[in-house]
Structure formats: C-alpha cells, structure tokens
Image (cartoon, rainbow, N blue to C red; front, side):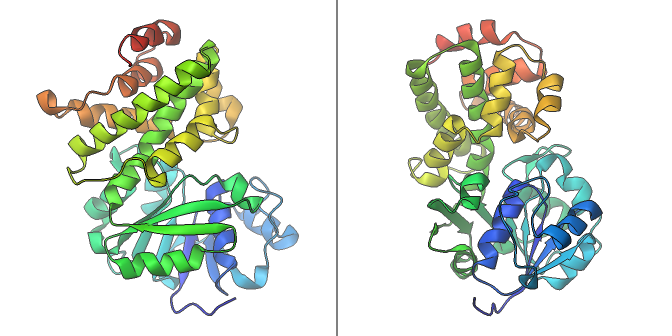
Length: 336
C-alpha cells in the first residue's frame, strides 16, 4: 500500500462503487466510502462485505472510513468518485452543501441524470459550477463482477488535465487492472451512456429470438451510430471509435452475462412490460433513462441530427409502447 498525497471519497454503494473501492484499496491506505443505507454500513462493519453487491469481496476496514453522511465524505476529500445510479444521483447531489467547485470529480455513473437529461459532467458544470478542468471519467469494458473475481480488466481514465488522470490511474491500477488515458472526457462519458442503449437493443433482439448473425450486424451498426451521435451532439474532434472505451465497452455490455442492460432488453423482447422487467431485476438499467435523453437531444438538432435508427427503435419500444417485434422488423430494413 502507498500513502496517497490526496484524499478520495467514493459516493455510492452499488456494484460498481463496491468494485471501485476494492480497486482503490489495492493502492492507497485510506478511502472514504459514502453509503446511503445505515444497514449497509453496519453490515460492512460487521461482516466486511457489501450485503447486496459483490458479496465475495472482503474489505480491510482499516483502509476504509464508512459514512452515511454525504457531506462528511465530500468535506473530507479533494477527489470524488461518483458511482451512484443515475436515477438517484440528482437527489444525492442536492444534499451536498459543501462547495464542489474546488473538488476534482470523476464520473463512474454511466448514465443520464433523468431530471436534467444531462450526462453527469455536464450536470456538474451547469448546476454545481464545477470547472471542466476538474472533471474526469472512469470508463472502459470493465464489469464490476469481473473486478471482484480479479480477472484482467482495462479502464480508460479521461480528463482534460493529464496529471489528474495519471493520479487516478495510479490509484486504480493493479496486477489485474490496466489503465489508459484520454482527453475525450465528454465523448467517452457519452459512449458509456450510449452503449447501455445498444445493449438494451441487443437484449431485445435476443428476447425476440434473433441469432448471432443479426447480433453481429446490430452491434456493427451500433458503433457507427454511436460515432455519428457523438460527432453531432458532443464535438467533431477525431476519435478512434475502435478504442476499448468506445467499442470495447459496447461489446462487453451487449454480450456479457453480467450486463443488466442486455438482461433488461431481453426481458422486454420476451414480452415483459418496462415496469415488470424493472421490478424483477431489482437493479437499475441505466439505458432506460439514457435512451430518452439521447433521443430528445438528437431530435433537438432538427435537420442536423444524427441518423440513429437503433436509438429511435429502443425509444419507441420503451417510451411509446411500440411492440418490440414490429419495431425490430422495421429496424432490420434500416441496417446494413
């Protein structure tokens, strides 16, 4: 373990937050962990593992300061990692009365803030006045479940300031975690959001009985659609969409048995309603909220919008009550 020259707080107690705390405690000797539930906190203190997620991960509690007070966590840290499900992130951030403008903040949310239809970085800029130079993203084809099993995984750390990204990379890197750097903060954050939408599409296709041949075409079209969306709605910089933070994350989220978005989509394809699928999963499928935001943001571009037949089809199914089977029959005519 090394003595960190900065103080880190992780906000959130889901599977990805739990995995991030595990990664951090491989490297630094003190992490503050904000968990909303007092039950979760007491269970961690007593049994050394999260009662709901990644239960096989046992923590050295000498390296973790647990709190149910979000302001205590934020006050302590100069670097925050936000890993709260997007459906709850605004209500949690609204509890904070500590000035966030001087904090370095990394998003590990992978979803849209539903109330503002913004990615977390943009939400923090607009509503909490956090400067862009203090924002970062932790992304990549990296499922929490495989981190728990210490299977080799890759992360992309994005930030405007390379020094900020390098510090976070050092804090997360280990023998089973490799890291790379990118300046494309908002492009990668949007990619982490959009891949969940495409994973839902992949799941719907699976639920409807489409095979591997169609899945290959669907994902091939998805990565090209992602590139067009980001270029039209984020910026026109040159980015290699084949990099792992874009294509790699899309592939693992669309195909993995650990993907809750694919699972959610598969249930929809099999005839579940949105409400019943969410109730049975008991976990947040980030793509459900993401597709509404992506659809509306793109539509607001008018004649300059990106061509997004996959996003449009998923939106029609989830928000307009369109039949998955008929919507996918139409979609198959728009893919190549």
